[in-house]
Each structure stands twice: as structure tokens, then as C-alpha cells.
Image (cartoon, rainbow, N blue to C red; front, side, top):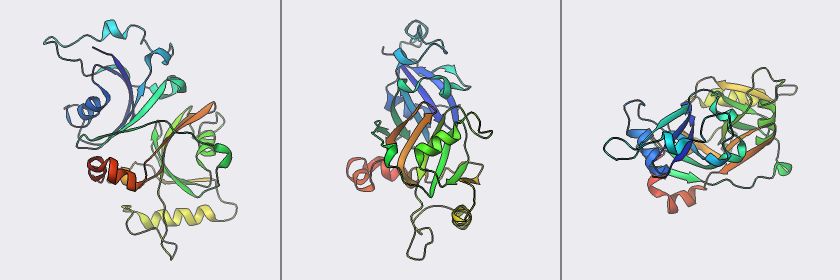
Length: 253
């Protein structure tokens, strides 16, 4: 059986070995275990050959044995603490988004030209290892460098985050179809951010939102540190409706 290495980057952080293919693993983690309440799961596939030497992964083939009845070993936890920062960026492969009912969407890494970034405002949901929802003047690559700067006392060595929609109507208010329960507070934070002399980043909420999260992704997902950043483009709504219809209509949960 082929051995896979996955890094879970939402709700909790873990490096996990498994015989399951990515879609099977996503279903198992979302709905197939009593250890985890039903909910969305976001995880990366990691290249074991480039996973570095911080974790004991060189002998995974020998350690990950099938179950006594011959069925695949679904999960063997390698680490549940500070896993994301110690896996080299070069080892990160596809990103998988799993809805609470086990629908899985795979995202490939996409090119990203940081030189063409425009200043915010933007709203980011930090996913791992930090979890606050923030608004920022900084575009993604600058935000990533700022949050992973060793001199930043509220940062982290590496950050995984999503860029969220803040579409406005003709009155400058957040559009009514965005499923934010705290839209007035978000608007207040954006106004404060726009004020002269304000901070570059402001916290909106210290706890992550879950309902309809995938429905409000704008550009996509980012993971990076001071050495670089990887970008996973989120498909446009038309592409989701045509090519990923079942996943998209499961994503509002």
C-alpha cells in the first residue's frame, strides 16, 4: 500500500501518515472518525522525500502497517505540535478542502507575483498556527512577511491563512449575500483601518468562524514565512458551479 503524508492545517495541527488516498483521507477526517466532531477539514499532501529531518518520516513504510484484517491504516500521527513550521515549504503539494459532509476539493499551487500586489484593505482568516480573523492594509505577501517577522511579538515562524471577500454594495456596505453575522463590526474595523495613522492590521475576532467559510474565500489560500510563500488559487464561482457543483453546494455548511 502506498504511504501518504498529510499536514492538517485547520481546527487542529497535525502531521499524519496514512494509506488512504487524499479524497478518502478527507472523508475519513470529516465524517469517519469519532475522534473529531463533524466539520470542515483543510490539509496539505506532503512529499515525504522533502519533509526534512525534524520529524521521523524516513521509515514510514515500515512503521505504517495495514490493520490486522488487511485493510489500510487510516492514520498514524507523527506530530501534533508545531508541525507546520518544521516541514520545508518545498515539501508542500496539493491543498485539500473538505466540507463537513466529506466532499473534497483539491487545489494546486498557483503562480503569484508579489511585485504586482496592491495595498488593501483585505480580510484574512488565519488558520494555522494562529486563528484570529483580521483586516489589513497589507496585501498577502507583505502580510505574510509581517506576521512571520521574528521581531513581531504577535507573529509566528510560518503562517497559513485565507483571503476573504469584503465586496461592497453601492453604499459602501458589505454586500448582503456575504454570510457574516458580524458585518457591522467588520465595517467598523475596515473604517478604522482606513483612518490616517492607523495600524496596518487590526483584529476582527479572536475565534475562527465556521459557517459558510468556503463560500467567502476570495483569492485563495497562502502559506509562507520569511523565505517565501505558496499560493493556492480558489476557483471562480462559475468554475465551481460547472466543475465542482456537488462540493460547492456542500460548502455553505
